[in-house]
Each structure stands twice: as structure tokens, then as C-alpha cells.
Amino acid sequence: MFNSKFRGRDFISILDFKKNEVEAMLDLADELKRKFKRGQPHKYLEDRTLFMLFYNQSLRTRNSFEAGMTQLGGHAHFLDPDKIYMPALEGEEVAYSTERISDVARVLDRMGHGIAIRMYGDPVGWQNGKANRIVREFADWAEHVPVINMEDDLYHPCQGMADIMTVREHFGRFNGVKFVMSWAYSPSVHKPLSVPHSAIIAAATVGCDVVLAHPEGLELEDRILKATEKRAKESGGSFEITNDMDEAFDGAHVVYPKAWTSKHFIPPIADEPMLEKTEELFAANKHWMCDEEKMKLGADNVKYMHCLPCDRGYEVTDDVIDGPRSIVFDQAENRLHAQKAIMSLLMD
Image (cartoon, rainbow, N blue to C red; front, side, top):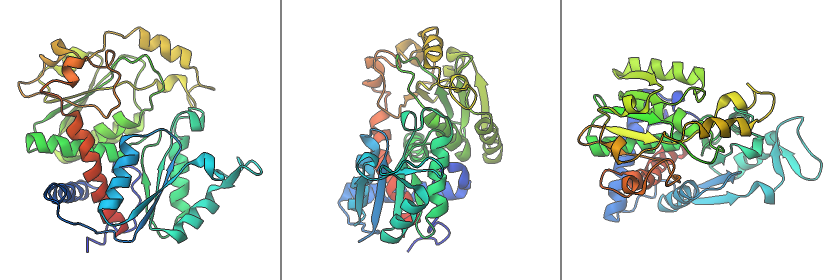
């Protein structure tokens, strides 16, 4: 039914897809959203099965995938790793409680039509990049079905797709849109780098003028920054980094203030997680908050975005997130439609 160039491909990072492919996904997401609103059936994945492994909590991700598979005519299986034999990398198996990923992936590969995984933070001991390695290990062993990344420690590509879908809905374009991904203070340091990574990659891929703002010590991964810069040049957009939140917000069309942890205090840069050091760094930057004064720095039509859940009273004030310039619930809703498009194209 759909373009065969998507069929069976894994969806681990938006970097694995070209601009025209990302735009094709967005076009299908728009179509599926219209059909959903009109009550038109769109059972493109009738009798298909998606296996979902959740190592972390979830509200939007789990429900959008489950609802999406139902609306597409298929079924999503929720798999709690604690209730099965925990999938483990070779050499990390524990008798009677784990099962090697190569075995788990090959079993699920033969029973269904897709595997989706969410893993970051505590399940991998805050070893940055290990969760992504595990997701890719599943992909290596699942020969016949796609593996979809529902968020690991490096990427959250489904969120990134919903982000840019929402931008296009509100602005009707990408070029000329100043998209600001900014760090913001939270009392919790348990925040992976995946959302800001995927947000800047997605926005740069489609041609936004991307600005990354954060205090010193909260840099993103160098290779992600290089890839974002390359994508921005290819798409006709731009990419810059600043350590000044006010400077970033000046003239912005989209602001996306969110906390993320410091890569400097977790492995592999640090020998072990030193979250108390990150807490000190966070505490020194409590003034990085999105409030009405910050929003006034943006363009007249500036919009506030967040992947949710947000830390109200820290990352953002209530009057901003509940105000007329907030589009966070459009963003959350679009998780459903963006993921339905991804699943339809990959699992068709």
C-alpha cells in the first residue's frame, strides 16, 4: 500500500532518514489525523502485532502506541521486562532471571510484525549510550520486523516527529521558523539527553533556524551537534548554540525549555554516575525558567512547547503552559498520529 522503501526499516534515529522521507512521514501523519477526526476507518495494519518493551514509566508513549495500533487495526502487546526474562547483552546474563537479547529478538521477530523499546537512565545505570546500544542489538537480531525506538538515552525520534508536525501545523512552514531548544531548571537530574537531541535533529532536518541554549556544563553530544549542523546546511536552515537564555528567546517562534542531565557526570565520560555533581550544576542555574517575561522576548506569535511531563514551577510557570501560547497538548496529541504514520510505513 505504501512506498516499499520504508517497509521493514528500523526507526531508531531521525538521522537514519532523509529530509524527503521525514516529510513523507509527516504528510501521512497529517492524513491519518484528518481521518481520525472525521471518524474514517484507516486499518492499515489489520491483524498486525507490535511488541512493546517498557523499561521506564510512560503515559503518552505507551497510550499513543497502544491506541495507534488499535486504530490501525492491529494490537500492541505491553511487555514489562520484570515480568519476562530480562533481555540482556552477551556477557551480562544472570541465570534464571535474564535471557540474551539475540534470543528474545529472534523469538519476537517470528511472532509479530514489530518491536518497540523504551529504555534509559536507571535500567542501564546511567551509562550514556548503553540503552541505544541495546535497542540496536535488538535491531541487529530482528531480521524480518522493524524495531522502533520509543526513547533511549540518545534519541527520542517519535517525540521529534511529533514536535515538527506540531510546528508545521501552527506555522505552515519550517524555513524562517526560529526553533529554540533550551535547557530549563528542574529539581530532578534524572533527565536523559534524548529529547533535546531528537528535537534539534528533527527541526534542522526540515529547515528550521535552530538555536540550542544551555548553561555551561550541560552540552549535548558532540556528534549530535555536528550532525545537526550538517542537516541544517542541507535543508536551508541554520544552527547555533548560546549560553544565554534571553538571547536564545529573542525573536523566537518556538521555545522548548526542558531540563536534561550533564553528560560530564555520567559514564562514559565519568567513571561512575555522579548525580550529586549534576544537582550542584542544576542548582546554580535555577534562573533558567520559562515565564511570561521570557515569552515576551519571542516573536508576536511565539509558541511554547514541551514533551511532557513538565516540572511546573521550575521549568515553566503555570501561566505559560496553561496560557494561549502553549501548544503542548497539540504536541502530545500528535504523538499518536506521527507514530501511526511511522508504524504504517514500517510495518505495512
